[in-house]
Image (tube, rainbow, N blue to C red):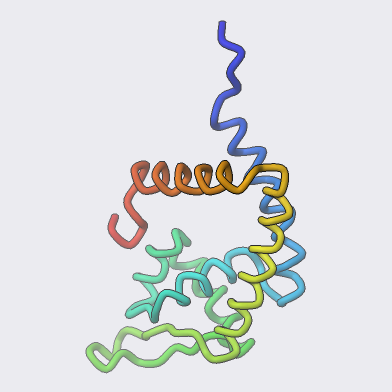
Length: 145
């Protein structure tokens, strides 16, 4: 019998702690977690379609609409008819959405610095590299599925 703790257990505990620490950050900016996920994906560039955005975020299309409506009413995103196919809408960040995303990212990085403070710089870099490698190998990005 092995004394090694399973990865799923360890990752679950870490994810719960990160989520617990992120929640007040999102609340300060009037966001829920899925709102932030949408902003983060749009921070990489506009989405050509809402269906493409749903795939990129991993959010069900019917639930994504609620997030998009809220974000649009808050002035954080804009939906405009796609000139190539007016049945689709391109979704993009507004300047206020870009500012909100940047502010959240700064606060999240500060939270992560605090969370990872007990880990040395080299260990942290190795941990982050390892996570990126495992995530990349585990599954293709949602937009490529």
